[in-house]
Image 1 (cartoon, helix red, strand yellow):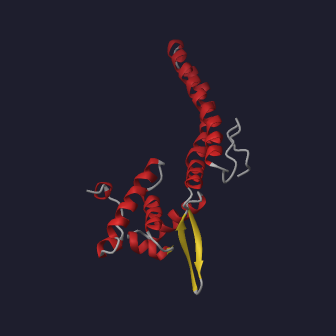
Image 2 (cartoon, one colour; image 1 turned 45 degrees about the horizontal axis):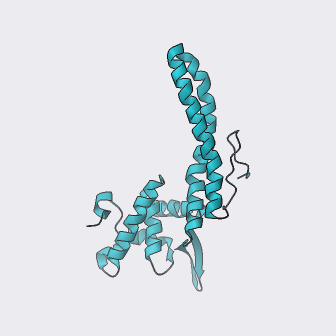
Image 3 (tube, helix red, strand yellow; image 1 turned 90 degrees about the vertical axis):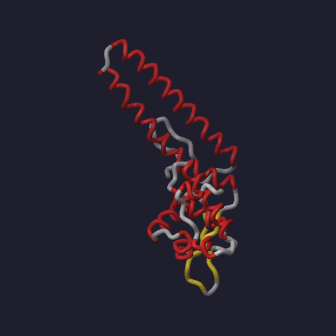
Length: 191
């Protein structure tokens, strides 16, 4: 039995009507769980899943209908997926609607997801860690010593993550934009 019912995932309309429904349902469910692993909304996973499961490019209205989600949710999800490079717009002659196809390169997908989910956390994390040090003075000396050691550990982890991310992105292939993070919390790409 599929995990689709357990996750309360949107069920593609075509699933109820037959004709590839089981395929769509399982693919959508797979991508919902994957999206959640990256702390992305279920709807984003469902949108990518329905595009992946479809042999044809889908327009916004097709996605709304097949997933039974709101137009706003579909539009927001598509914007996020475009921003991370997970979907590409395409056009068909004689049709003014923008249609979307999924990105099929795992390197581009992972690079975009890492840049969207991990890089911003590393930027914010540096500033947050700097603001923690003065707060240690509120504790008695014995507790301050323990917490100072924990703060040093957090700073070490933050530094290692900042050094590791460009390596991971480089391993995956050419990043969409530079993800090098400066110690001041901003990124050096200017983005």
